Length: 628
Image (cartoon, rainbow, N blue to C red):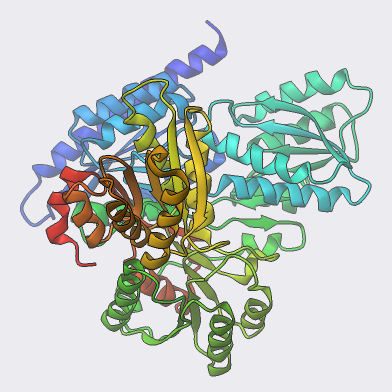
């Protein structure tokens, strides 16, 4: 038997023993004398391994935070780099009757259906590394595409204008985060022909495997690479060992994870064994906190928490090594005094009215001094409002931008004044991403995907061509761009679906009706489906179809986004066929973030709201509870 197999068997045995001991401890605790607090919830934690320093740090953060909550018991498992073992351990945890599962994965393809099945029965928090789709309660992790872009920028800075050859050292070939990180890295690198990725290796996040693979490759290369990008710091250390063993010099090394431990990324940068790394928070502490909120049903839970990553170089490494964790006591933040300036985009829809009401109500509940001004869908006026907030010296500025571009100058003024900016509902495109602090809102691309998935999954006549009219929102607005992108992404593989025309409806009822009237005049009965980027345009389209003499919902299927009460009403009567929710009730999350900022806490880079989809039967159940 090989050493690897012996080690694997030992780790599997230890994992099973850990489950049994944890369960026995839980059962014993229930029988302790009166006076000890009862266990309210049992939480299962499944990790793919406890060899990577990053996974070890995740485990430590989970256990440290769990120890603060005496009404929970947590059962931990370690799959020792075996996907089959991780699936088996999750089934074991499920059989123990856990109330919630926290899971980190390596193999996305294999673990996605397992997690989807568990999610049908209990809440699931996916931690650090993602799965496909939306079949989980909450994801806490990084934007891996963005990390890839950051790594590419760091590579170009290290190599300079002369460029150079790059080797990419990936974690696994079956992980969603690896695919996203590689895509971000390669897209950015490809923008300049001076930089070339010559080889891509897969080392399963392991130091020794990275060292062995690199030695094999470099022994037969006449010219060594100029830079090697490893997807974690363990593999980056393996790179360092390989190039030292081969007596090579002048090769830059980039890692990722930024763990502050011996042989962790921060120490490797400090000791100049690698050139840079990226702090990639594990989300362990936040997972336990959110798990308790989910189980207690205390508050509306986001769908995704995208944590912030930081580049570490020899110039700033000491700052991060000595940085203390800033944990905010939620009781203390209740008394934080803060002034928020909010520049609302306009009053164009029912969604926007509900969004404004949520912000006003949440500010009142949280004791936040709110100065809210409405730009009435005028970008210049919105910029003027933001400048007014800067002059007033508010603590935080938040706004829902009319369009994606044109904000660099005014946000630079806010940054120079030391005022953090939060994007609400819509994202922007700026040259410097540090001009904004956080985004709170929806995943517009996923909304478009969900709309298209319903359409293609409901097709009954194979081969029949389906003609679609798309009613877009405001041109260059983030929801319009994302909803179009997601919809077209899904239709790309379904060639019988054809978008006849895309018409700009500006998210308004009147414009939606006008554009649908135009479409009917051009295409008449050839139209099979209307895809409207919001409910107001969909309601306008329904009226136009009625007036044309066709039956909306029957002769022409209608899909919309927002799921406001009027959309649910149209769904319940059969005039609308499907609606994807876009949650406007962002006030509570916004006020929490504003107070955390004022208290000195770093808030997530993105907070993506949880949203559902509705058909006719689901609308009838929801409509009485919908207040907007």
